[in-house]
Length: 353
Image (cartoon, rainbow, N blue to C red; front, side):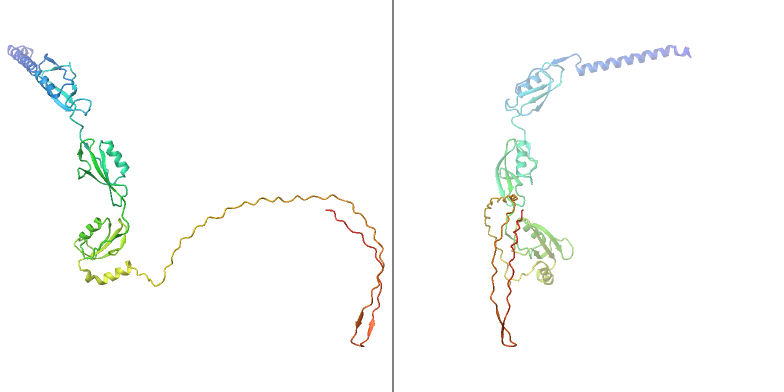
């Protein structure tokens, strides 16, 4: 087996294979050298602060490709002035390398209009100023959304959120002034449901209950009843309920009478109404604080020894006899009078408190 390996034919085949492999490697490197300019480098020219047209001409003469990109606008520099270059000036690059140029644009880039609809006016103004837009004319229209942004305008046309505008553009704002009071309700009887909905929204009312007689949802049905009644006075933003049918209002008399008994409550005007009188406010009289009366202090009398008084002698007084009449004998008999003995006066008691 070893003899077969060292046969001259085998050795020839090996030598041929090595020669072919070496030739392929040499050709590959030569091809790479030709296409990659191996060993050939070019210095990137300094085109900073030049105009983009001059910079492109210099790069073309140097055998370099280029790519122009806009930079953030800076009013301190000229429009289309080169502000940045990559790779940096002086770098060694291969022939045909792409050089990226950052150029100052002609003006500010356009900004997207933020969505500020149905938002409070103060918040909407701040959001518009943050993106670089100015608020111009501010109009007020009747709306149930008081102090909310209803729509935006630009040059007389309605502006939608997301539209692109030049920076520092001036836009108009329409703000809701709140609902109107005491507005007449439109007459919807005889109209189709579709027409009634449009009229309700045009008058800044809200569509409330929509009841179809057959339980369907056909907007071509004719309205035969509404609540509130036509020409009633209501505030904007209130709901209007409608009843519709495929029949005419004249054919729905029974249903109308039934609904009237529910929604049209009759008021007896014969009885006088209680007139509410506002109470008259009278200021209360100022309170006069009375001076406090101090209770007199009780003085404890000093104990004194009672003086005994000597009773004076009194003489007995003889009383005259009284004459009494008797009905029995019609005679008067004098009563005997007796004299009381003289009593000694009792000594007075002195109470010491």
